[in-house]
Length: 520
Image (tube, rainbow, N blue to C red; front, side, top):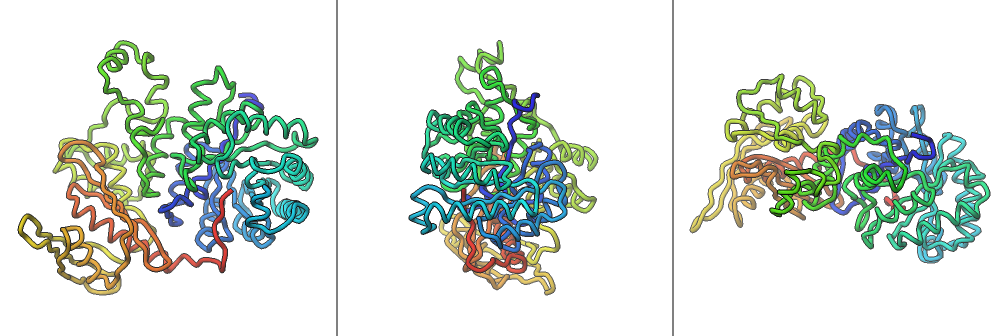
């Protein structure tokens, strides 16, 4: 691939996608996703916003020093202490990048920053120069660029490149522009910024009007060469340009764009699934590339056509992006070696103890089902092997009673780290409510349940059920997940997982004073 035909994939799933309402990732969660992003072979991972919290700092530091392959980026406002914190997190890393940003549209200047253009220009130049003193690879973003005065945008782009920026990102922060306008904007910058060839032009599109991918592709055709995107299109408000859609549009329509990426397409589906599970946000069935129905055919005409010649109704091979052409059959007769082999194919490298825990759950499930599918295995691993260190709470026993004319009740026994097991009973408005009340009594905790989501992982009456529960305890919010063929047990596991995550966050997450995560 010629250099000018290569599109740099800048993945911001761990930063912008984590700003998705309801999403919450621990440091171990981010590490697991970062490892998979490295397998996907993205070029840059934006790992977090180091000044925003000690946990974000730790995530950026660990990813930068432990993940091989991609450049690792930390976000910073045009504030020197932000840049110093990012530089500290990235110090000694093989491929560090600092990404600094500031609002440049008149709306941002008047409404949020309360500064004039000259003041913001000075802040931007000083920030880029300061970042350049710490790392060679510096990116600058004029936030809300698509609503910024063109002359001022050219001025600030020229000045920040002169100060040392190696990448200039043009964000459509509020998803306001349309494809033709965005292409014209990129062409205008190339024609009117004299030093523009000294930097890579990047784009970061939000999907407020449903045009993030279209805007991205239009800008690439006009000369941009870096895409800032997320898995499953997650992100602030309506989300970002979807990595999988951009990558496969370039690859499938190479005849039109003449561009490509280094992304390993076969890792797309497994990466999408991992992000979906970790974020607790399901992928819509009709989502392009990674949705469950993306390669499904129900119309008789379509079925007939695909069976005779696949390309009559499919423009991509399902296997090219990681979908299985046939089901992988694992049964109770399969041993640990077979299980480990399949899990490795799915991208999981487990320790001996982790494999043993997964195998016990696998055998338990295999005794109930004729076949165990990949989705079942991913659910088992995600349910059993989730956080580093010992769990504070562990569900030992659950018994529920419910039915027509019966008051729903539940009895649970909870093992609490450093204490004896505690057993409690309670009644409630249904078996799940009774179970949660009994767990609250046993744990001595009472977080608020904000959302409860249940879905089948595979088909049939023997399907594994997955429960995602979002809870808050004052200022702390988190998501718990649990799986089982018994949906009440899955609900209990999800709630106990949420309690463990709250406990972990209380011990590890200390937010910096009055610093809030911001979008670009």
